Image 1 (cartoon, helix red, strand yellow):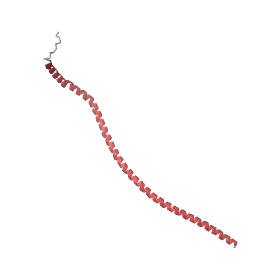
Image 2 (image 1 turned 135 degrees about the vertical axis):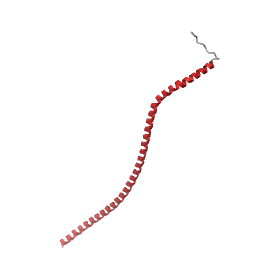
Image 3 (image 1 turned 120 degrees about the vertical axis):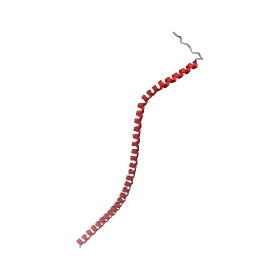
Length: 134
């Protein structure tokens, strides 16, 4: 059996260089490809999910854009409708004022006619009384 022999200080730098070179080659040939495969296995599902998320984001952006267009057209239509309602309201108020003026005039005419009828009835009663006396 061979005993473990200690490396002397003179041999150490050479051995260390060989060891580092061997480890570097091993890392390049074995560890990095293995890590790449492991990362790919874990990254691919995440990339697929991200692709789905990106697609969903694009759909949401498209929907938001359509909503903004619809909102803009609705605002424009509401503004048109509001102006039309206000104009119609102004016209109706004008017509209502005319009707109120006419109603007031008719009411006054009816009162005047009622007063005239009452006066004529009183005069008629007086005439009838005078005719009965005569």
